[in-house]
Image 1 (tube, one colour):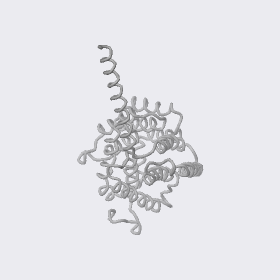
Image 2 (cartoon, helix red, strand yellow; image 1 turned 90 degrees about the vertical axis):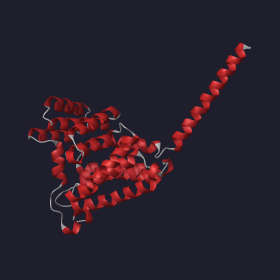
Image 3 (cartoon, one colour; image 1 turned 180 degrees about the horizontal axis):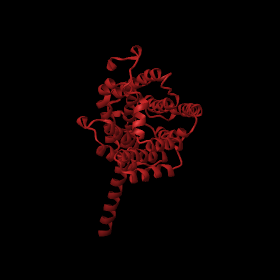
Image 4 (tube, helix red, strand yellow; image 1 turned 180 degrees about the vertical axis):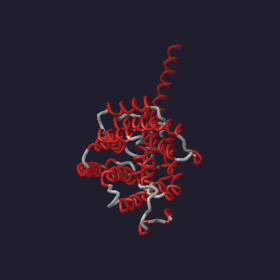
Length: 293
């Protein structure tokens, strides 16, 4: 009789375990904001975009177009939320195109207007999704807005805290998401302490990014950010250590060479990017928006 009771207990325990697994799986899939297909394409591109930093601009633009066509040809049949997933991927692709297409003396204002159109699409998608917005949507919306706002001091004040909130929401959904942590760290780096900025906060974000990195592209951006943060803090041993870690990945060689030239000249890649963004420069009146005036 005792063996029967024990057998029944084990049987009941097994059924409860089986039911709990089904329940967990159903909830995971029910709450999935984007498909595994899109997650994989994002992860792949995070490394590809670093590799493209060593390519000629026309070659990089051609490769991004090819990737975009290949992915979008398969996206609709694989997507959980087609509109959201397409916008996330479109944003990643456009931001990288921007890096290779930008000529400050010729097309920066035109590209900025295109970035603003993309930014508004991201805002609309966030508003419509609510709790269904994925970490990646928050991440790219923050990045696109950052690209847009850094052309203008007033736009930076107008959108700055919104950008921080987007990154924080992405990190809330995934505490070690590398891209969001690096972007949030950059926000803390550039923001004055009076507005909540600080290099110590930036360092925490970059370390979290490194902890969560699973691909070469993710590791690269974390090591690069840490290297330049330590350069700013005049900690040359840790600057060199993280620089060498980034170099050992054998991607992004051209950008790393640029970073070394900047450092040898006495300034960080952070400062180089600020200069290239054109903040503090006069924007022609015909390109100004309400938040720039």
